[in-house]
Image (cartoon, rainbow, N blue to C red; front, side):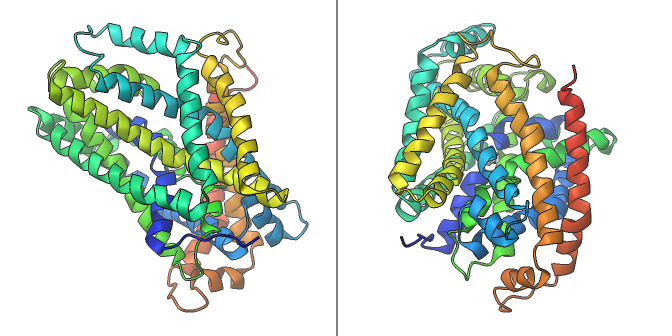
Length: 458
Ligand code: PHE
């Protein structure tokens, strides 16, 4: 069967950017920045992208485009029977594994979009928001229903194929996401007292930057750019031979970082506007689903049209961001099943969807009926979340950089990033240097650090 490609360069970049821009940009980056030195943190973060992120992203692109195969197939083709083929399989597994819990949060964003739109937060006292969230996620039906809905949308897009599914949806959703982000940023920055929020986010404070913060920036850059597994490699397998790899990687990184910074401009002006302590807003789910709905109601006028519109757009933005990332995760597994087991796309996608439905439901129920099932002090959802973030992604990233730096043929690498000599690559030596020495070492450190936190032996 003929393998599909993306139809245009812009479509390819939007799809890859769609994978990168996700929940991580909103629910982790802004608060990490604010608490860890503002602009100083952003500079450290950008250095992490330049030194580690770009070399690895370019390599993942290269591996995908060169082989024109799913991630497991790609590494197998390039490593000819050596154990390195397992790196590709690990990438597929990681994508599939992340999707199981990531979809659960995607489902929550749908519920919160609806709650915002029907003005359900009107008149709720601040203390009520925690109850609203906790009773929602503990409910055995509602979150599961939304989960099925969320996964059904992913399934629909994936079964339509690369061009008319993934690319077309990215071409609609990514511009939508940019526009909403811009509108929300402007609204938020116009709030009285907004400048304090901007200051919190940007004022450089180098005294806060220590080794822990640097490791945190590295981990965040990794997750946010969708590195260390099969997403970018799979998408790049649909790149045209003329797609400039390095330039595309730079574009994707810029889009991802700009959206992450703008998310901070959406969040903190409102937080300061209502006089809340930014160190008490929390991170992740508690920030997004407990603090922020309350913050937005108060900042824009409880129950007013402005509050309803702002809040609805914010959760819709999160939904779109989560959806494009989830689609990229699903495609990793679908491409793998379809190509390695010679199935039709429909069948392959259905198989993946089915497994995600089952495991996703378990993750979702782990806040309610299954909350008693705990391992290492974590419920099922957190096990999926932490195991992928702390173990699978750093491990994958380390192995990919070693593979690209030490195993891949140097000439092949040079030919591919220069598109057969058409493009100049003055950065080539630096890139290889990072892949060989800096990236594996740095990611190894993140890995060890996180394992310490994870504490399996407890
Ligand atoms: N990059 C996405 C985010 O920022 C998450 C993600 C990780 C998506 C890995 C795909 C692969 O939320």
